[in-house]
Amino acid sequence: MDRNWVELLQELRVVQTGVQLLAGFLMTLPFQSRFEELDAYQRGVYVVVLLLAVTAIVLFVAPVGYHRALFRRRSKARLVDVGTRYAKAGLATVGLVVTGGVLLVVDVVGGRAAGLAAAGLVGVLVALCWWLLPLLAVRAVEAGRTG
Image (cartoon, rainbow, N blue to C red; front, side, top):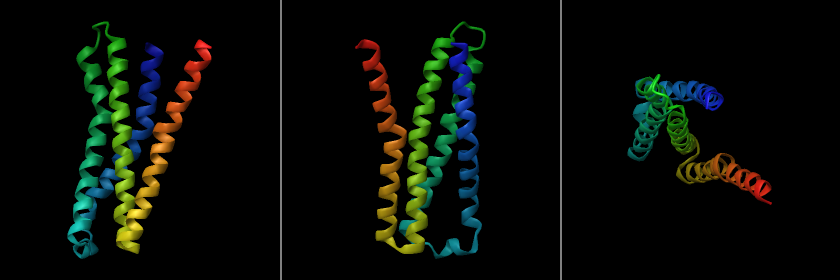
């Protein structure tokens, strides 16, 4: 369990920095001069993406608070299990942030149809790389153990 916890923390460190930078960038956008030019739809997308980015930060930091609560209580297996759940939820949320961010940027630059198309493609790519391919790998590993 110690190795599992250390590996989980390393994974969280890798993704957390990027998410924090992205959220920080998103928080500065309303203070840019061109922000006023966004229409109601674009502002709505922006607010949703910002809130998702903040949610992702909370999810990725949550295992630290959980660790503090369980420290020296011989609950490493529970900690790893809950931390893994937080990490998976955080990754799903980051996938939505990336997809929504692409939607917003491409909508501003190329129009609504282009934004929706680009976001759709990014959403499929995220689902493929972060969910479907790992799921298939798990199934292949499990099939190899049993067969």
